[in-house]
Length: 243
Image 1 (cartoon, rainbow, N blue to C red):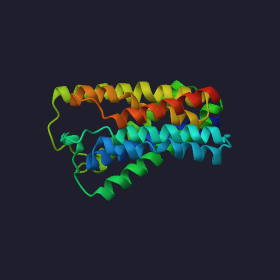
Image 2: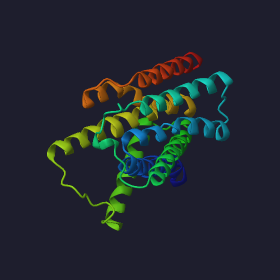
Image 3: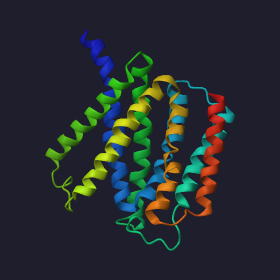
Image 4: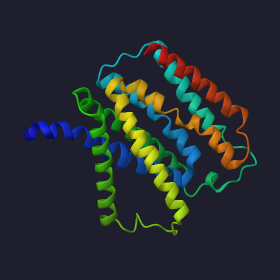
């Protein structure tokens, strides 16, 4: 009985540790060095990584059409993020705060951790696991790991600037949207579909942020960003038609 329970828990726990604790920590570290826009470009590669690993580990069929669609989505997302900055935009989010190579390395590792985290959750869901429970276990594991890391390395996790109530509110809203709601929906998607195309579809989030960037920077994103968005839409449409 204990073995069966652990078998059902081990996959979400591993997924939470690798995908949320390691992956998101590395992503935020990358953002801190090279900014959110450039870190997101690197993080967008997680979809292609997940699709490739799923084909190797789970035998998911990836046709040439699907490869082309995945490439369209991935390149489109990267183009949209790459061209998401106007030349005269000197916002502090665009500044480098360390070595470029370090920021790039952290971003690539974050993408790989995200891909592996999605793969780790799949076996439990395929075997009849409840997506809601799996999401709760993943989030609980990540929260526990962050709490332990805080105790072990307090200097590394110390907040260097006082967090205002407004910023705290934004953090809580982000946590609810991305971690609670978004990751729960991701578990439901993985329970009912292939890791490859689920990861690709979930990677289109940066396209949805283009209107938000328009509001924040009060400037319309360049034509290249909209071109990347169009390419992503085309790739997404092909994937949906093949599902």
